[in-house]
Amino acid sequence: MYGPIVAGLVLLIAFFVIEARSPHALLPMRVIADRTRAVSFGVMLVIGAAIFAMFLFVSLFVQQVLGYGPLEAGIAFLPFTVGIVVAAQVASTLASRVDPRWIAGAGGALSVLAMWGYGQMDVGAGYAADLLPWIVVQAVGMGLLFVPLTLTAVSRVDPGDAGVGSAVLNTVQQVGGAMGIAVLGTVFANGISERTATLAATGAPPGPAAALEAQAFGTSEAFGVAMWMMAAVTVVILVGLSIGHEELATDVTPGAAGPPATPTAPPAIPAQVGPPSTDRAGPEVGDPEVDAPGSRGVT
Image 1: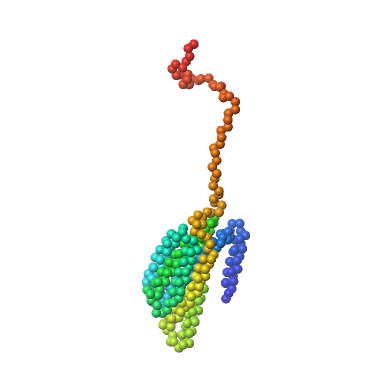
Image 2 (image 1 turned 90 degrees about the vertical axis):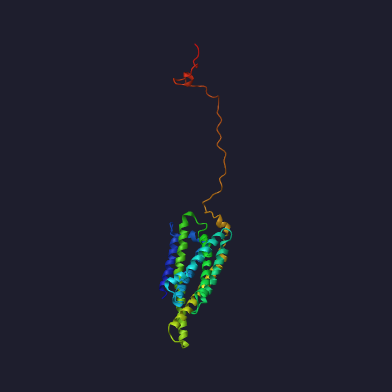
């Protein structure tokens, strides 16, 4: 049962050992050794887990519990797009004035609130009153999270490692999404099984109504775990992301800029030694001094 997990961990450890010893590493350890970048990568891993799972479980809830069709479900998510775009613009404006920990921390707190709100939905929930407010809150939180963390993830990185830093950021989001669906999907399935058993024990007749109630319970359980994941992320951001906005605004790549050059005086022309030379070649034909009228002497 745990064989694939153990094998994956062994391969992951082997990867880091090989990369640490390789002179031309695919992932240079200096990229993740910086505290600011390491914190950014770590929290993006968990954020990816929470956000991917949120899309999955809300999509299932909208279509299977609320009864929306695929097109209606897609339209129901449009406010998320608008909210994250607006929040990202606000975060970009604040990035030069406010430390990234406070911007991302506020986004994390809003995400925690949204996860809590998702967890309160039941079979009788409606879109406008019970789901739409939390979609908007989640969108604003994600916009405030992504912008500062994207900046801090590549802060102070060497020019040769800039592509690696961006690739690591994208990779941890994708890996986090896969892990989040796996972990929270297990919580979701266990919640459904638990609720189904409870309903059966109380004598409730099996059927679509019982299945929807069990699904709503599983969704609530999954979002409860996601809420604590985002709460942990928020604490790590506030404590571990210590870089200031001034440093981001004047971010200088290590080794790329040296001390300002000191202006120097132009080189001095060496003084001539001895009397100037009076030797001169005789005039030649075509010399203006020879050919000019009145330039010949009287003999």
